[in-house]
Length: 145
Length: 427
Image (tube, rainbow over all chains, first blue to last red; front, side, top):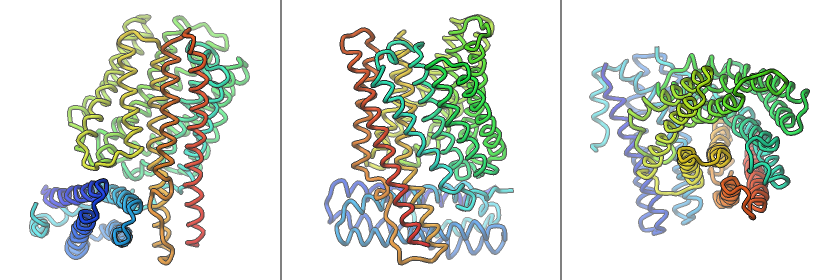
């Protein structure tokens, strides 16, 4: 069985993990000219990942595999949770509130980790099984590493 | 068929189930703190003193096992897609047996009353039976990362073994004749600390260490060999004790301890390569616990005093690691449950605070500092019996443990109160 979706989307999760770690590093250094772009890069990467899932991967999976509807709904709800945190983060960067940035990034990290775990162990293997060779095309839309 | 349970929060238990366990635990550590203030030297000078036996069981059952039970009820649906059947009544019944059972047994060991020992043993037997059956069913159904599941299943077996050996030892205290009594006590201790606590720490660590601080995953050789090595050592030690080969049993238990020490070394090396740069209080607690595992294994290998090994394992691992995990897990669960409720109620006007508002990091660091003072003083007192300062060190350790546990409870309570307040706002 192919695992192209599991492999490539998991890889993209790790890209986002590293961007979150980089944003945290910039906060420890305390230079706001670094913090703002680091936070923006993180939000942009995660948004891009969510959009590919919501506009391409999830609809195609739901089309061929009706059982996936419920897990997809849960995953999309968690995307909304994280988007609320993106707004909080952008606002905290705007007011240069370091403690808030640290706390929001930590919350985003934990929500993201348990979300990724569920996608990587349940939803992506399901998509690999259901979409088969179409997975290659979807995975190709992810940003080059 | 792919397993889709655990994807939704609906599969998780109500937040009050794990929180009831988490909020009860610090009281047992406070009791041990009081006991040390009162009789610190006696507790730390000999593991056979009634006060030491009571302190050991208050920590191992009332604090460590209590938190491990609450955490398993919470984690199994998420990590293994395996909700515990009837989690609310099972959780309540487990705690209803565990809390009075631990208190009665500890009092019986301290003051020597047959009724207390029998009542404590019975309550704990019922509690562990209920817990192990329900969690056993969940673990049998679980799908997920095989190495984690294997370690968790073996940990549950070790809990049952610890209970059976404990009940056997109780019959000896009540008058039955058991040859080589102290060897069976060592075996009970090994199954409890290396098996139940050690294996569960390994199973949970395989998942949460890479997740919490973005480290590389555990190498396959470590996860493949770790738990089987520990369980093989413990089974060998049990066989040897049964055959009267006490020396061989000690070596085989040490073999199991080495398995845990290797896990600690691998964990420290992975955490050194973490991508998240922050050194938060949870990471500091993990370092404390892993170093305590290594120090206790070294003390054991070098023929150090059993009391020192006990202090390092019980306080340094058994209190430190659960505390560090709680300081992260409780804010996360609070935030996550509130977010879920907010989406359900569509009350987006209410702003949710981030995790560190639930338990402030700075206050948590103070708690860690006081705890480390307790650990240091208790280790010195246990390592230097008869030293002119041993009495003072024991009492200071007690006072610091009392304060650090009270602080932990205060931080937990603050987290729960903030959760309740925002939940009211969400309707």
